[in-house]
Image 1 (cartoon, rainbow, N blue to C red):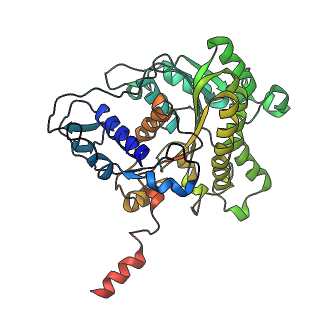
Image 2 (tube, rainbow, N blue to C red):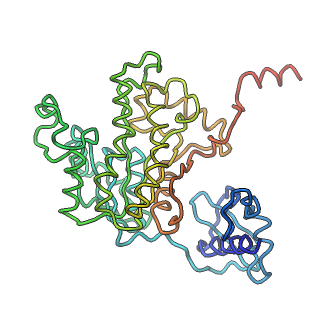
Image 3 (cartoon, helix red, strand yellow):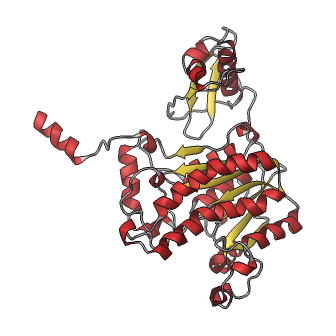
Amino acid sequence: MASSLTLARAVAQSLVAASSTPRPSRSVITSATVCAAPIGLRSSAHSSSSCFFAGSLAVNKLSPATRLVSVRAHGTGQIVASSNGSSAPLPGLPIDLRGKRAFIAGVADDQGFGWAIAKALASAGAEILVGTWVPALNIFESSLRRGKFDESRKLANGSMFDIAKVYPLDAVFDTPEDVPEDIKNNKRYAGSSKWTVQEVAESVKNDFGSIDILVHSLANGPEVTKPLLETSRKGYLAAISASSYSYVSLLKYFAPIMNPGSSSLSLTYLASERIIPGYGGGMSSAKAALESDTRVLAFEVGRKHGIRVNTISAGPLRSRAAKAIGFIDKMIEYSTANAPLTKELDSGDVGNAAAFLSSPLASAITGSVVYVDNGLNAMGLAVDSQSLVVEEAVKV
């Protein structure tokens, strides 16, 4: 029990340290139960003794000198706390990624999660490298040069983040030997070279030596609009190859050039564990495989290279890629109506979570699926269901 109390104190002290100067804001109050294995105990049977609700038991057991009077989580992601009623600025607990280098695979515009993650990592000080699908490379680089993304590149301090280098990448192919002739001769690949996973990892090594953060923001299901029963074997395997095995391949070739203590992230979706009608073509299976692989890879590259491996299960976002599903607006409406937090997900929410998971603050987190979906994953009933409306009408 003493170790649990120590953990509680550490949690509360971290909340205090994470604060910045308070400013007026409409707050969204959140709560969390913090659980950890008690020191010296291996049996999970004892784990319940180390779970604390950070807003009550753990905080109230602190001495009066350090007791938190109020804790609010603001929409900006900043935590504001006061000790003994004082509103004086407190020491910070920043996400500092200065000196770190990140490679984000799957950035082709400024709308998706990959871009948001790149921006958040850059905001924390990381150097940014990206891998862009070869057929989209020219348009992406042209848009960067012409300033089309300048507004999206702006950081909180008014400066714009830079991309140190853009690499052509097609993560469906591991080595040059895997590329079929029809792709080699395809006009959309003309003018680009060294774009298989192995070659890109070698190019990054030659150009920069090493990286500290690897992000997999890749997914493609050529038959995503088809029900699973109507999905061809070719379409199903294509979804698995592009959306999940590509992560295995990236870690296989990039892990040797990642520094000890590095972080690796991917992006998944709730369809991996819940039925989402319309999200077909084998994509739900691909996301399930991605989450399973995350756990196995966390063990394998953790033991071999000291790298952490996690995946973020993000809520629906109106990105260019998501529009291919055909009903993304309905998915967003459903989430807003039924999630515990009734607001539309912002790509920056996922970017901020990625920055945290990539930082030393998350040094003990690996093999996890982290939900960033306004809590939709926790729901077991659609509160806007027509059946509930009918039942209420009958009662009246």
